[in-house]
Amino acid sequence: MLCFAPTELMRTFEHIVALTAPLFILVLLGYGMTRWAGWPKPVSDSLTRFVFAVGIPALLFRLMSGFSRLPPVDPRLLIAFFGSCFVVFALGRFIALRVFRMDGVSQSVFALGGIFANNVMLGVPLAKIALGEASIPVVSLVLVFNALTLWTLVTISVEWARHRTMSWSGYVQAVKAVLTNPVVASILVGTAWGLTATPLPAIVDGTLELIGQAAIPLSLIALGMGLAEYRISEGWRVSATICVLKLALQPAIVYLLARWLALPPLETQAIVMLASLPVGANVYLMSRQFDTLGGPIAASLLMSTALAAATTPLILALTAGG
Image (spheres, helix red, strand yellow):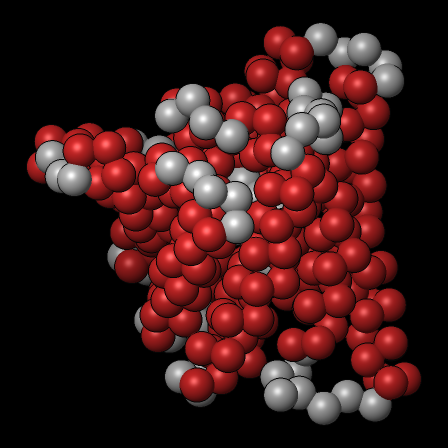
């Protein structure tokens, strides 16, 4: 474990809060625009679509196009990050069964809430601001495998609960969906360009830089606008348990695995930060797809995002220099 003097820990915490507070204020701004100012849902949908399909991909492509100049990434971080996902997912299913008496499908969605974070809309901006551009290759590597690994995991879990089988065609469709995802595609194409060590044309680089600069604030405002659609109204015990799994247990397990694997400090802090982020909107989409836990999952999105404004900076402070 890390050892900090109280004053050193407080200074680190205050520094990271100062860096990350504007990001969460932008989330609050987006929330207020929809909840209190009455901005219509189509605005939120359009902004989210732009950020997901253009803004964030442009940012990631430009950063990864310089891949040959970036520091190398230790692939062991995938073991630490996704190893924690499998552990927390299994524990989540056990809790859902024993404590809440859920069926297999509900268990799967409940457990997914404990491991699937908002890594694109919140993780990329936080990494860039709090940890610097050197952390982007780490974040990108996790993003590439995140959707494929976790969507496959929950799909197999649900299908096994329903039919005790998983079709090959279902897996192929999952892989196709991931590879055509704009975020994943931009990382892969940007990395391929970067490996050629060819600089981007000045006009292309300048355009992507402007779009990337807009992507961070717009993604956070869009996240806040989307959160305004949810209410903390039902199944609060389920929502609170998901928040504990997501915001406390998963980052703790990631940290322990990273230390066990002796990962470098930057990689350790980056993947622990990603693990500490709030529940991702994809979990809500999955709950709608399987028609289960819609209310509690929606509430967990709102609760975990509010709590992460304090817990994520604290976790960053605790892992700083570790």
